[in-house]
Length: 111
Length: 118
Image 1 (cartoon, rainbow over the protein chains, first blue to last red):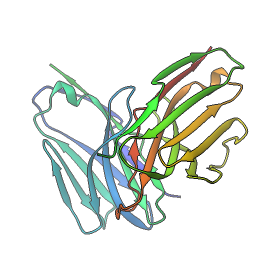
Image 2 (cartoon, chains in turn yellow, purple; image 1 turned 120 degrees about the vertical axis):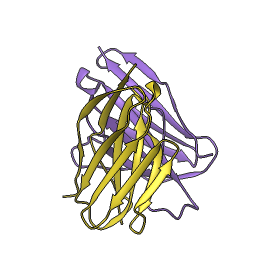
Image 3 (spheres, chains in turn green, yellow; image 1 turned 90 degrees about the vertical axis):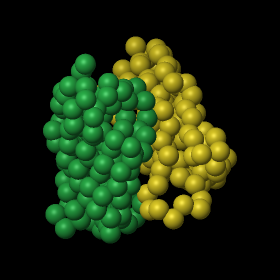
Image 4 (cartoon, chains in turn purple, cyan; image 1 turned 30 degrees about the vertical axis):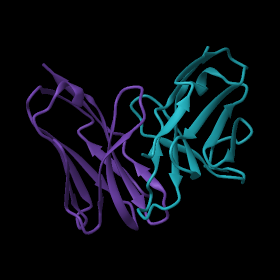
C-alpha cells in the first residue's frame, strides 16, 4: 500500500527560527514528490516539486530535499515568519497519476 | 496561471437537504477534475475522479448516489451532496488537471468548501 508518513505531527517555533519537516514514503513506482502549504480553511498551494533525479529544490525560504534511495524527503523553513503558520503536506505521485497524501506537519510560528 | 475556484467557500444546511458545490478552472481547460474530502487534522481523501463528458469514477466506500458529480464542461465540475447528514460535514476540495502538462500527477487545487450540516 502506498503510504506517506510525516513527522513531527505538529511543532511550535519562534519567529525567525528555522525548522525541518520530515516525510517518509513507500509509494511505488515513484514519479515525483511535492510539498504543499495549506493554510487553515484553504486549499493546498504547491511549494516545490522534485522528480527522482533531483535531490534539492528551493522556493524562497523553503528548501526541500529528496533521497530517493531511502525514500525520504525534508522541507526546511528558514527564518520563519508568522505567515508560515500552516499545515505542510507531503504528496507523492505514483506513475499512474494517483497521489498519496501525508497527514501534514502542523507548524505554528509564535512571536 | 492554473487557478481553480470553488463556490461557495462555506455552506451551512439542514439535515436532509442537498448542497451543490462548484469547481471551476479559470484559466485552463480541465480534462480531469478530482474531488477530495478532508476531516480535521487528516490528509486529503480522494472521493472521485471525473473526466469531462463521462461518468465519474468513485473511490471504494464513496456512495455515488449520495455524492453526485457532474463534469459537463472543460471548466466546470459540480459535486452535489444529496440528503446531507451531520457526518457529511467536512472540508471538500476539488483539483483540476489540464492538457499539456508533462509532469505526472500535476493537479491544481481549489480553495475548498466548508460544509456544515446541522
